[in-house]
Amino acid sequence: MNKIMKTQFPPSTFPTMSLGAPANLIAASSNNNETTPPPPPADPSSVVAAIRSCSSHESSVRRPAEEQLQQWENAYSGRMLHATGYLTSLISIIERSDSVDENTNCRLLAAILLKNGIPKAFGVPLSEEEANSTNEERSLRQERAHVRNRLPALLFQEENVTCALHLQLALSNIALFDFPKEWPTLLEDLVSTAGATSGQSLVVRVRAIKTLRLCIQSIRHRKIIVPKGPAKRGANNNNPMLNMRNLGNLIGKAVHERKEVHARACSIFGALAEGIVNHAQTAIAGDGSGGGSCVVGSSEAHSAWRAESLLAVGYTKCMTELIPMIEIENTLADPRTPAVRRLMESLAQICEATRSYPTLLVPPALANIPSVVQEYTMKMDKTYRAALVCCISSIRTLPQLFAPQVSRILPAVVDPILTSDTSVLQSMPVKRLIYMTGLVRTVLTCAMYDETRNDSLMAGKKNAVLSMLMAGGSSRSSGNADGDGSAKDDPGVIEARTTVTALLAEGTIERLVEALVGKFLRLHSEELQEWEDDPEGRYETDLAEKMPLTEADGVSPRHCGGALLSTLMSRETDRVARSLLELTQRVYQQLPPEDANGMLSREACCECFM
Image (tube, rainbow, N blue to C red):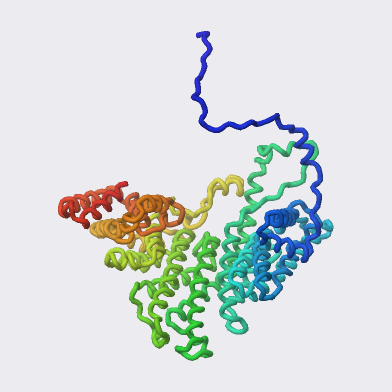
């Protein structure tokens, strides 16, 4: 018992290195307290010289320039007065319109640096009252205002597509910090530019709607930061547990601020909904006359129709980003409910009008344009995909309001999976298959459309713990479970449940399982050729495609079909398992083992069990 126990470890196989003398922590801490020397003034000539030096092949020239640019960018967070003017200098460089290649490269790099520098400059907290601001804060306010004023004009005047993309990203970075307090009309200004039928070119309108989508994305994913209060003398402010008693106030403030941001962003809902309907109708009808200003069938009308198609997709993608910010807790009392229901109906109509693939009837307005069939099919496919993704977002966020459209959307999406030939499905774009199976999965996993779920699961999304913290212990659940628009009595929800039940009825679910195994999981000729040419590469690609990195849990028809099969298995475990076993038994009994078709079918059956 008194014997000392010793643990023997095997010798290390890792290379060893000398750590040297112990670090002088006291000296290090004292060095951190020293004031960092300020960078030189960021005037336009100095910034241009540094940018040009960054393109040098000599490291002795390039590295100091890169360090100088990084120092200017980081100086904003250090509140150094010398740093103010860096973004202004970048704006002045971008404003140059010289066509020389060297100047074009400088402008492009300046746009990239502007995009990267905005979070540093706009993320610095300033005093709420300008009267209490320091000279540094006033200079920074002026520089921010200058960037906000000049950036939209630079974006819409830019001819270089790559430079314009970075300016779009720069504008979305500003939206992350300055909307709605410092720039309350940002979204309305972009919607107005995109919807201007006179005075704006089609290129500018398309660029505006794409920028709007980036800005809404940025706003939707912003994190609310609650600033720390002033430190009290003698208080231990380093202990986070001491602030737990104020957790309810902090959460309430964050939730209130988020609601304000979402409500301000949703002010463009009506303009987006109107744009979706108008541009989609024009694109589907092939009308590129521009309200009569272009001759039907001319090159100008063709270009106008292309722009209308891009605008239809752009408006729909913007709505996809905006829908999660629409918070409707009482569907009967909220005045926005009728408008949202009309939008859902319009999305269903767009899906019905564009769902045919690959044979689409080209409208007469485009019949005289050569090689227009393939282009029209591609444009309508993108419109269909954008509408499907918007429907998926609606089901996840507003399932009760979308419920009346389930009986129209779900059969239209499932029918091609059941009836289309394998070659037709394989000719479809992969994203189309991913979104089709993704919509079916979203409907099947929605608790409101499942008649076997408990009604309590259909309550609103409000977290009960957050409700107690903000309401002093009142954990009243919100939304549609308290008689204010009860989902269980909603005719649309009842119809949606009936549609889902019909999909899972005996005979239909067995056909769907067989279609997924035979048309999605079965390897096609291109995949077989990849296995033949590069088996190791194909194996690594197969593993990468299985990784659940996207909303659809797969980036190929094989894996998105497998994801839908897994959803069916979790919903109807016994019936799907029985169908798979029966299908596997038929394959092994009826198809000869040496036949290539039989081998592929058996491999597909084995894949569904893995």
